[in-house]
Image 1 (cartoon, rainbow, N blue to C red):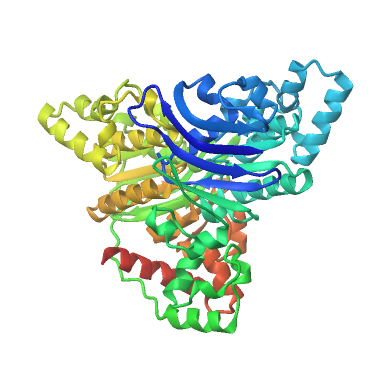
Image 2 (spheres, rainbow, N blue to C red):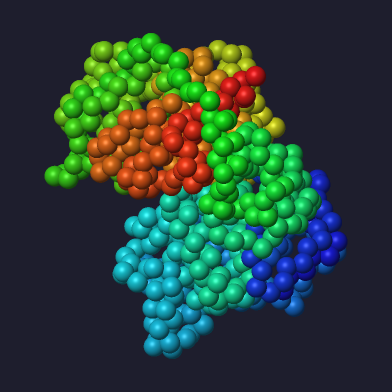
Length: 561
């Protein structure tokens, strides 16, 4: 179906090839995962398959690439779209219809298909993708998971033999991401499309079977093997990709992975030997006692748009030096709560105290001296053309000495992994890089409280780790950090306290392990049980939540050594 032979590709704008001597054969009906760190070439490989390269993004190549009998560079994007259907990471950029039904039908309208046949096809694929009840709604009004299914239905309706998913999990919460992977698998099982998934969230993709994993680094294919072969190798650690947490726990407990024939499903890793080893590894777990000094206090805070309350009677105190995660389903009120704290929404009822003094009357600018806020859609925060100028803007507005600005900006760019791009235009950056610029522009101002809305969304493990190490360093220097997140690994590894928001109310204020060990809270926050918890529960450990906490505490201790 797809064959690369000694294929090398270099963008006209680049000095070096992005893809180097690619040898890859994908057979009809295979389900392939392509993964690798940022800059590995996986997105460029995908663009070669769907015709974006060389039609829209020019460059030159050597070697050969054939896609369902068509030669690379000879077929137009339209011709290739009949063979390769693409679901993009940013679903909003793929919508063209005013309603879900119109969007799904778009390609058939272009083909001037008869109305009845078109309606039958829309109904068929909306049923297949669980969208039958959404057909009259605007695509933009749907949840992240529903938006992705609209895009999938619009691609599936053409019945192309190859489906390409470009980072399908990047903007989805854990439960919605799991459902997306299951949906892709159900469609694959029923239709047997050749399926290619480009993604760096390995554990989440492996929630459904994958035939082969293609691991890329610096434009080359490093490995082409089954998922279990990859998990048994040392390649993930070597190339900076997070292995599933349950495998790390098994290794820590001294269990050899070579004894297992299948490693992709945590529910199959059950035996008396595993149970005994995990219980022995757990040891004791004690959190150090901490002196708590109130920083920000919300007392009986409610807020609504018109008659409908979005935030309902919230009591909350954030303490100096904490690192807290705030979780909840889409629409729970997380962003509204942040906007109340930062002053984008005016307080309606209740009290808002900073170090026991009211800040309800302070302006957005006055609060910004104490509280930094990084939006989920970070592009809304960017106003300059060049990266350096964007990060320097806040310091310039404060009248800081230019030499100090230069030093602070460069230091911040280094820790955010942006130093080498300091003179680049922002327009040339990827989605994840733009997010890091937005975070850098706030971090450089050194606020006492930092609120981050989905700080690691769309980041590969290397940049995720780099960012979180930096945030922990800030936290150790005394900056209090509140992170709105759906990332269970982030919650577990980097915060000691998790707030669960549901329908505008805080329904839990617990340790992350306790939250993720409660089926009710996991459902309420649109999370999923972690593989660590499932590993402990399946092997009948008496305190599964305690095991998760002990493991994370051990990992933190190891990181600090």
